[in-house]
Amino acid sequence: MSLTHAIMTSLLEKPCTGAELARRFDKSLGYFWQATHQQIYRELGKMELSGLIAAHGMPTARGQQRQFAVLAAGRSELASWCAQEGALRPIKDALLVRMRAAAVLGATGGDTVDIVTEMRRHMLLHGEVLARYEAIEAHDFPAGSPRSAADELQLAVVRAGIAYENSWLAWCHQALAALEAG
Image (cartoon, rainbow, N blue to C red; front, side, top):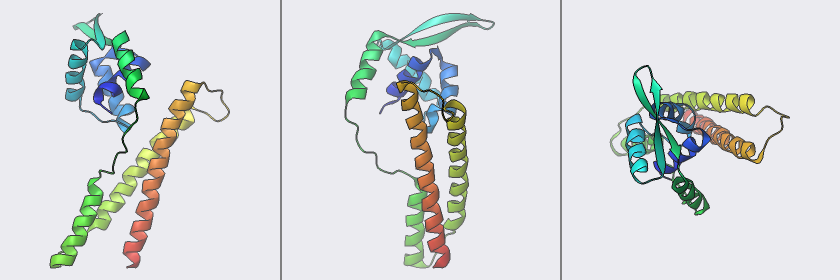
């Protein structure tokens, strides 16, 4: 997946300014695809030059703001990308590398590393993200409410986040229990 596709998805949900888009990345889309504000603005410029999006001026108290919207070429590109097979993404997490490093350091030179504190910190962080996903599900998709096919897809994304965080928490509990028992 590229930042271009994430931006077009967000702009199709609601055309907005670069600043609004960056805030949306910070709040919701950022759970699944992260980008800095600088990366977002740089990508918006490339997308505009490529004819995927267009900017329209909006008068404000400070001058003109540019609101971005997806053009037909952008919709076509996004639809084409959606139809492609996606590659399986390997796990890329610094905690797992730190755990391997702690194992090697302890085995090769007697250096002990307190990895348990970092694992507990990760448990707290994953618990916080899980709570946010669960709050989104409860607020945006209350039980028993009618849902469209688009709503069901959005809910499936939120539930993927919930499953992911639950998986990490279960793994953390298991790994900590094994470390504390050993």
